[in-house]
Image 1 (cartoon, rainbow, N blue to C red):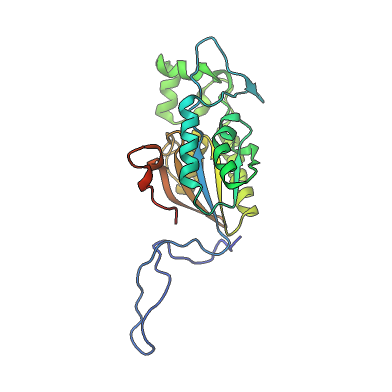
Image 2: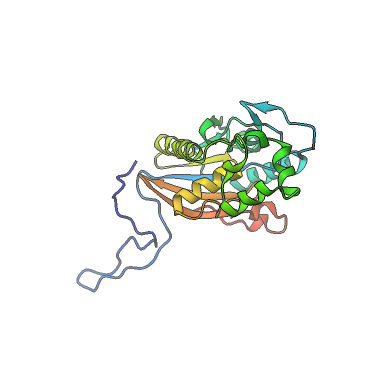
Length: 250
């Protein structure tokens, strides 16, 4: 990875033009990742099957592990259409099946076997795992309302401590970035994870970036200890009227 102090222009003015002896000119240009950086395309998994009251999902390591819904599988196909023509060096998923099912069409198109980064799994919300979490918000449970007001997942009983969640998410990002310097990596994760990653990158309020749409793309450049957010919640590939106009990821 590049030195954390290595200078680069966030505005893209990175070259000089003009004949020898004339005043130097500094035209603006597109952002270019500095040497050693890793570009992460953070994908929120496709829509999961509906949570149904009284019918818990299968669990994996204590967390609800639903499959994708029919819409979620369609979103995964549109994601593959969007990224199949891009330069992608690796794909990662978490231990939860909805991320693997989302990545599968793209992995098949590119011939890439996804790696697994367990530390990027969704936050564990304790006793609210599964349909209970959704029910609490629909019923306007007082604890759920406080959770939104205070932007704290860990008000749910038995929830993973926020500090532990933040630490493991950062470790997962850093491991992938270290393995893939000068490469672009698709990482299929979860809404809470995307929110945490971008909050750490920007120093924002904890939930400023919570709410990425299913199947959306967010773009992070990791260079040393500097994390640069390039885009959030890009969904152009999910709208049939706009999918052919989706901008290339350059």
